[in-house]
Image 1: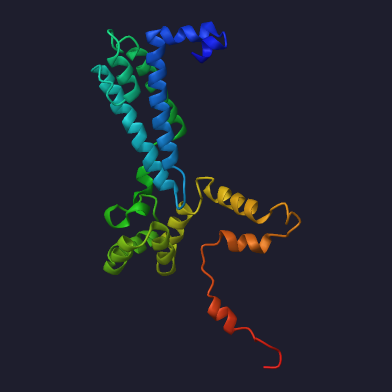
Image 2 (image 1 turned 180 degrees about the vertical axis):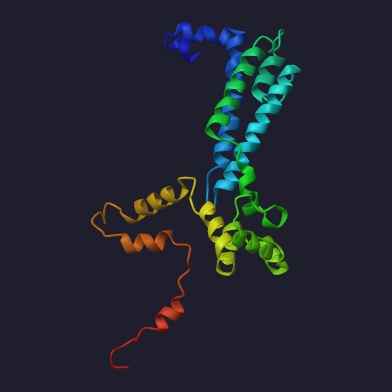
Length: 240
């Protein structure tokens, strides 16, 4: 092994310890699941309500995994199951340790990410959610008007969440502005990373002194230029 070749005998001996291998396999499984969650929280058009749902789902999975461990069921942890199948004792010796770790994860998630998905239900699906208790009279009236509008119901199914609420804001400004304030904060570094990538491609070593303010605005914009209209607005030659 590499560790033996490097004369790291104490570390190499760990790989002959079944309990260490069980814990290592479990941690690889858990980090894999956390990485999957992390990927779900990244990308374009991610809003606080979406992320709250994903985190709430993972917290519920932790509860299920904890209950399955009470039944000695480790199927959800693929690497741990594979290692346990190749041993005589199975992974029963490390289940208490795994349960303790999952309990710590549950406490950490509850502390850092309190379950507040319910307060975003009216934003995620206004036509199947009740008006929040903290709505004022005018807001509640607008919410009733909105949820009774069959045209908006069809539009809600056809548009993404941001497009729908930005459109609603014109007709129902009170609840529209309130929904937009929830959707507006971007919760990932996606926009920053996209901007940095655009800067890196624009400012090469041959153009290091270039003022890229205007170029960057075009590079990160999702708007498509209407070149024909722009050209028609310009005079081709001063003599024309």
